[in-house]
Image 1 (cartoon, each protein chain N blue to C red):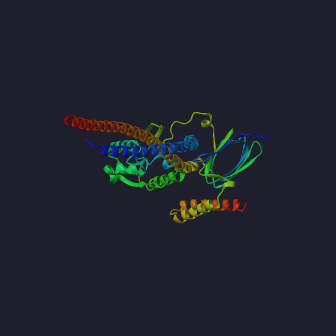
Image 2: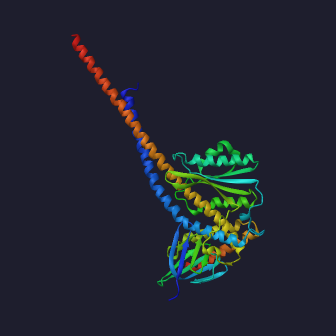
Image 3: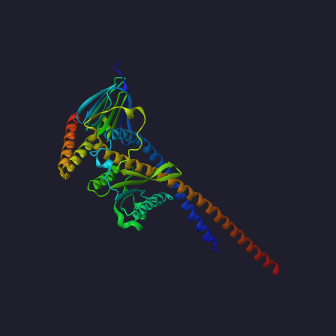
Amino acid sequence: MADSFNFELVSPERLLLSATVTEVVLPGTDGEMTVMANHAPTMTTIKPGVVTVTTSEGKTDRFVVFGGFADILPDGCTLLAESAVAVSDIDRDDINRRLQDAREDLADASTDTAKQKAQEYLDQLTTLNGAILPA
Amino acid sequence: MPSLKDLKNRIASVKATQKITKAMQMVAAAKLRRAQEAAEAARPYSQRMASVMSNIAEAVGGGDDAPKLMTGTGKDDTHLLVVCTAERGMCGGFNSQIARFARDHVRRLLADGKTVKILCVGKKGYDILRREYASLIIERVDFRDVKQMSFAQAETVADKVTDLFDQGGFDVCTLFYSEFKSVISQVPTAQQLIPASTGAAADDASASAIYDYEPSAEEILEDLLPRSIKVQIFRALLENVAGEMGAKMSAMDNATRNAGEMIDKLSMSYNRQRQAQITKELIEIISGAEAL
């Protein structure tokens, strides 16, 4: 059996998950990454996407996160998500609302950097929307 | 001397008031429990956030390229005070305590020749500060219709603050709120938001770990700082709600007890007067009978 480590998924409103896991797949800003036990200490920002958690009992949980960052240590991993929901609880309207907001942000953006940021966020949301909704 | 009927009315009205304060106390108690739970649920996030912040701030250091939100503008001329109070009264000295604390601060800053801007969160603080410093208040945020404080509310406040900072509206930002110590004790607190005070670095093992940053530490920090402001404001709002409910509960408890005392006193004089009247009537009858 693979080594396990402690994983915590926290949103500002509550602690969503605290469990012993063997593997976590995070949607990092620079690409997806799989974290296993004894990972080198890393800090990364997270883009909107799906986090897949495999617990030490072999169960798989999936969560949708909307941005945030992860603090990875050899013996643990903490994901601070801006907001997070279990995939089974995801609400189509909620995503649509976020997409709408992102579009408005893009239209409102005045500077190039802000525009680029808004566009990136919108793209990430659209990808996310396509990835989970048909399921 | 009030008549018997007046006294009776008085007693009835005080009893009605007592019923209301009693109900308010119970509502506050229920809300307090919920607010405390919310504050507790939010604690892990802000704790982690603080430890990550101190880690990363250490890594980036106070270099020239560090984000402005952390190092400040290098000046100390214009201060923004974010004053968080409750939306409703009936909670004892809760609101005036925060407002007084903020007012002392304003006075000190003005005496030092600084420019002060005030952002009021909550109606009551605005009402109090408006009297003296109406010209300094640049904006007020109202959470009147908000039932449960959520992160989105904190975000709206934080966005206003960071936008203003980006436009060069102020140099230093301080957050005023009431720290929830216990049901009977709320301590008005001032907390500096910008430039971010990273505080003493956590001295546990993780602080010394050498991190890989993805993307770079600077970019993460840039992303992290606005988020940390949101979290601090969110925490302040939650503490405030819990504090407000605690203060309201004890204020209403006091009011209920005072109403009880008043009812006792009024009933006493009501009974005394009734007896005096009976005695008087008896004397009249007896002396009338004797005269015959």
